[in-house]
Structure formats: C-alpha cells, structure tokens
Image 1 (cartoon, helix red, strand yellow):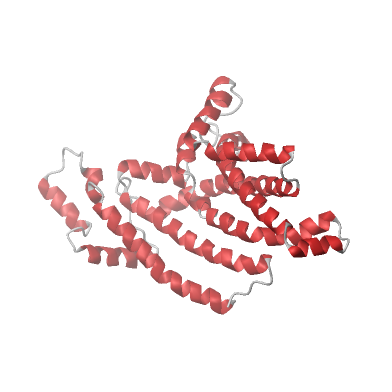
Image 2: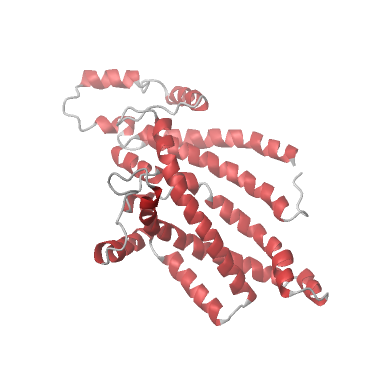
Length: 317
C-alpha cells in the first residue's frame, strides 16, 4: 500500500500544478483583473496605477507572474489581500475554525441520519417507511439551499422568534459556547438536508444490491441472525461506493457553504470567499480555491485507502 500511496502523491504534484496554473490564468483574465478593486478610486492617476502594476509584478509576462506566485505558495505565502492588505493565509486561518465547526457538525449529523435511513429503507424495500424516506429524500435534494435557508429564517427567527436569524454569538458572548448553540441550528439544518437526502439514496441503492448477492443468501442459509447478516456482512460491502461519495464531500469541511454562510452571516471561509468575490479580492479567492483543490486530491487518495480498510479483499498495489 505504501508504494501505491507514494505513487499517487507523485502523480498529484503535476495535477495540482496544472490546477493552480488554470486558476491563476482565469483570475488574471477576468474583467478588471487584479486591479479591479482600485477601478472606482477617483484619486488614482495613471502614474499611480503604473507604479502599482510594477509593484505587484503585473508588468511581467504571465508565466513569470505564475512562477513567482507558485514559489511563494509552496513556501506558504499566498500573498496579501488587495482590500485589507492582510496576509491571505492569516485571513483563511482566522475563518477555518468557524467553518470546521459548522461543517463538521452538519457532516456528522448527515452521516448518522443518511446512512441509517438508507439501511432501513434497503432492509424494508417498498414499505411505508421506504416510501416516506424516498419522498423526503427527493424533496430535500430538490430544495434550493438559499430559498430553504430564507424560509427557515422567516419562520423560526422572524415570525416565531425561537432562533436567531444569523451570526455566531450574542453581543458580548463570544467566549460562551453555550450561547452559540442556537445560532448553529438553522445553518446546520440547511447544510444537512441535502447531504442526508443524497447519502441515504446512495446507501439504499448500495445496500439493496449487496443484499441480493449470493454470499448474503449463504449467510442466511447458515442460520445467522438478520442482525449479523446486515451488520457484519452486508454493511461493510455496501459502504464501499458510499465511501467515495462521503470522502468527496469532505473538502467542503474547509471550503464551507458559500450560500448558507452568507445567508446566516456565519463568519466562515464560504462567507470570506463570497465577500472576496464581491470585492474582486483575487489573492484571497485564489488561496481558498487552491487549498480546496488540494483537499479534493488528498481526500480522493484517502477514499482509495479506505476501500482496503472497509473490504480487506481490495488490495492497493
């Protein structure tokens, strides 16, 4: 397995370089370019603009700009925000705990409910429970995130006043984690509903396919209890395709949910990306996209490794 992991890591290096080059070129070619943030400044003269272009290295050929940026990125320097002047890495690190807390809780909730619903639906296919779960899954998957978030906010915050409409804490209660719990309920609900709907469908489909396999019939013929058949034999095999889906969703733990964090004013990385997009703060957007792309590659590798953990018959050579 170690040789396989090393080979995948070596293959990931040119992949990440290609992704970063594409992102860099797209950022440079969008309307306004990196200097868009200064476009509406009435006090900026042509000479000031020329000096700024030279200071930022924008007068260099595009490939030279990219190489300079890549060398800095490898050293851990993702540049400085065009809007605040702060280091990009510091801004991302400041928002990361908030996003990990929100996305982590929603992921755990989605895993527990989504897999449980999928298993029960597969064990009792076409029952009333299965029909209700299927209908609920399709409904949850089809709901637009921004609309669903606004509706929850209008009902539970604006009309019933049961929950806060947005933010992380009450004023002056930033260090009180109990005060922050009510602020998590609405955004976690919005984030979880789609994942629960999707993962329950994958789990149901995979579980039903495994339950029709010959080795499950053999296990039942040996007199094993249904609990042992489902838990020890069927579940581990059914988890293999689900692992891919779940692991590919893990990078969102860092990237956050742009619409949900924006709607509920949650100060996470998704909200940072949205604000940076509105301000044309390209270094910040570039940093977030690069780290997200790296996490996608890393979790793709972890998904392959987990295959051999879930099913020892799978060997990685």
